[in-house]
Length: 141
Image 1 (cartoon, rainbow, N blue to C red):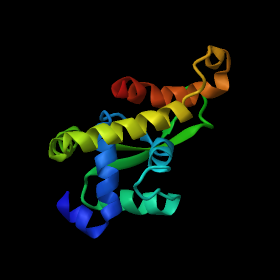
Image 2: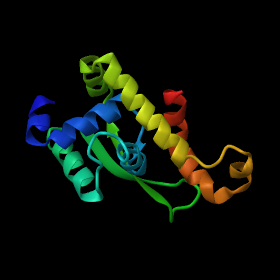
Image 3: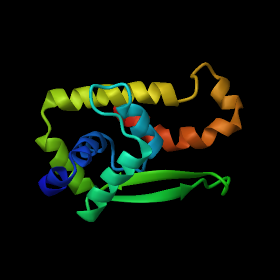
Image 4: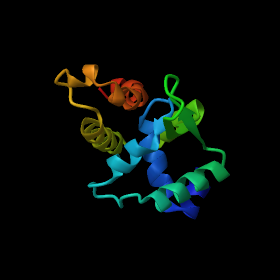
């Protein structure tokens, strides 16, 4: 992990973020949203791709598309961190950093998750996004 961080500091930042989440597929749109508006540099699509490529080069993460099981025209670009690497990365984080990252991710989740006013239940077009965020949202709260 240290080698990946030395090669690309953004990869270390990304690793800190994904280590806080459960080892489920993580939609890249969540990470992009979470890293914008923080004290840390925001990831552009290019910078995020480079950081993921660095982590993949060291076999720390997997990246792939998940096709919606109900509509094959909907695919979500995701990444997944191995459970063991998640445990090691989380153990190395100070508690304050982990709490700050969890707060940033939770704020991003609030922005991305459809309104909880009951309207999301009656709008099938938001269900695929909810399906990708559901387990991650539960882990954050």
